[in-house]
Length: 149
Image (cartoon, rainbow, N blue to C red; front, side, top):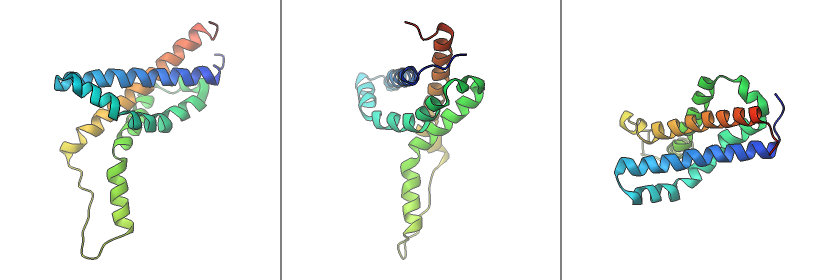
């Protein structure tokens, strides 16, 4: 397989990111049966998707055609891990700050109940896995078609 130019790999990754962002926004609005929930999701989710693209998108862009040698299941697990940690970044950061700078007489622990973990973190893990798998699929199609217009 020929090596696809970096501009095309970036375009493919942004296309996969856009697909996942749009579908998740529509799904979010359908879950709540409200169009304004979709609009709210489209507006407020952009920074989280940007961080996810930085953590997952840039490394897979740098891998080039070697991404096709990694099994789809492993890519899904890696994408799910990134999505999970993107949404848990702020609680973990808060916990770390309280751990490094304790206040006398105040006990603080990381209280993540199972009901929380099956909510937003599970949703973001599914988005991360879907984004990685869509990127691999688009990348394989680009390689099969070639880079000619």
